[in-house]
Length: 592
Picture 1 (cartoon, one colour):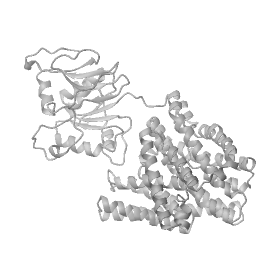
Picture 2 (cartoon, helix red, strand yellow):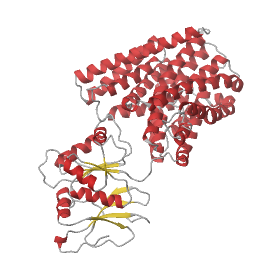
Picture 3 (spheres, rainbow, N blue to C red):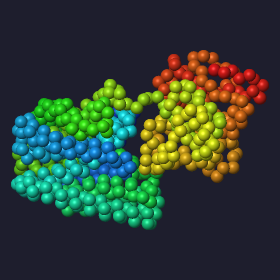
């Protein structure tokens, strides 16, 4: 390739990787639905989007290292406090039965559907046992299942990837060495597992020293993580193929759960890098698949996907969730969630080229089969996951569940009004008197553990759609809004302090404040103390004079705070949450 071809190919690959993700976010669909066909089309229609020509022998090692970075990031999001008891048992069984049944199905169907040797069928089988957080995570964000169901599927998707990678390496070595006894393969698997675990321990120790002992800041800390993960993963892969995946996720999991080592609340550079890598990998790997290679395997792969989706995965879920851990409806949804992702694609890319070069019959079908299975499963689950979840009743209610932090009388009165509008309101307060006031009002009081989770940068506050910080400490509200921003699925708002206030933090922290400029915390508290109360009123009715609109509760249960701008046109069935004028203003409050 010429210099201009390399520049054009690099630019086009990057543009497709980023553009598809932006478009997917606007369409609210998994980015894989766009990345895979875009890369395939670019590879088929142009000569410049060709990773083998652009990178040569470096392409396969770069794919392995890139996937290790993705799995390290996935490991950082895994909290061991959520993998205990029944959840752990379900995840382990899903992995064991998933590997055995998927592998067994390919061993039986592969020679029949594709005419390949049993060894190649086994290679395809271990490639397709994986799922992956890059696919499962976005789908679950779209579906929004209950917390325990989400945890089971996320843990399974994250942990099965390195297991599938090391199994692929074992089968690969068995094929290129001409087979081997069962005992030899078991020992090879255990040896690869030991290399990955040792590498993960080394990586975790290095990160502990760099992040805890040296106390590196965000920028240097991110660079240290990147260098450590790449170095450890590459070193493990030199010793044994694909063990870097195990090392990466073990390092991330260990670092995220070590006591005394607080990872940064936000990792914008690292998160951006991971998203970019995902896009580049899918576009690049898809570009290596030619239309000519797909034609002979297209119809057999459709039959294979039907077996995997309709028979193998439901059977895996049935065998793995027989206990009381999940409800029958949740077990059914587990049986309808097994998309394939980036690790399957990267493993197929890594091993298929070497097996083709070794002259193994049928090895040239490994990558196109994997590509089609990824495309088909992602499309099937992306289009059906939410309707299936709704039909099974395993979708969290769309109705808002706000958490109000604060226990002053006006805050409790506001919570009553929101509950009267049909919302499931949760409250938390630190003072004993405030907590008694909340309980006396009959409002659910959050436990201290919930607030500890909400302020933990590594945790995710599940089931709460928005947080409203309404305490009488403006600095606490401002700081908590910053800390909790990444722990809540929805927005985090705080009540505005007095203009010109003397707080240490609150007057200088922008964004996220509630209501208009005249409805700051002291004004609301004083107005309530003088007798003003919160009320609800159908949006279709005229608003009483002197009343301020604070919230709009939609007919579908959504909760929208009203800012400085007046509320827009109300939809049928909407409800307004109003604050009446205080009697001292010379008006008679009109109760709605």
